[in-house]
Length: 119
View 1 (cartoon, helix red, strand yellow):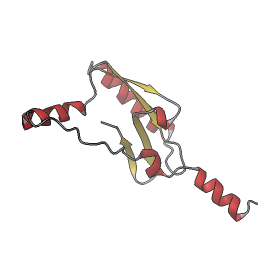
View 2 (cartoon, one colour; view 1 turned 90 degrees about the horizontal axis):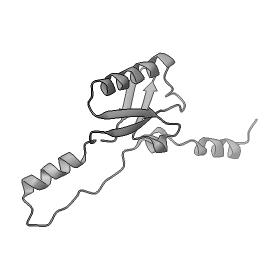
View 3 (cartoon, helix red, strand yellow; view 1 turned 180 degrees about the horizontal axis):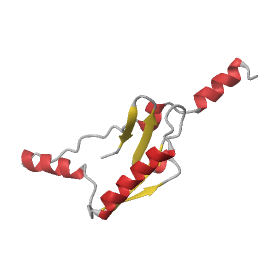
View 4 (tube, one colour; view 1 turned 60 degrees about the horizontal axis):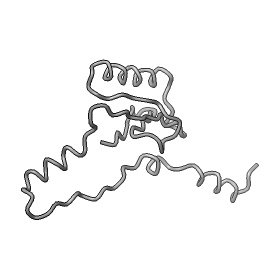
């Protein structure tokens, strides 16, 4: 049996959900005073969208209480294939680490599915 200090170390080594999936804070882009405010607003809105031809990396969260069933993961991957086949200009690739992923997907019992998609 692990001692209390060993248990504390083990528990702290596993990142909490909010650490893994927290949205990064981004500074609001600023413009020179001679730029029309409407144009600045449009530039900000467009810069938060994925461009056609983007390869998006996704990761299924598999930490305690968040692992989805194979059926749930298959449904998500079928949706990604459907979107790609529609020609919306996005492609999707599964990666092995949340730090590599723009899209992180978790499944929580009795809480449905969720994803921080980045943009």
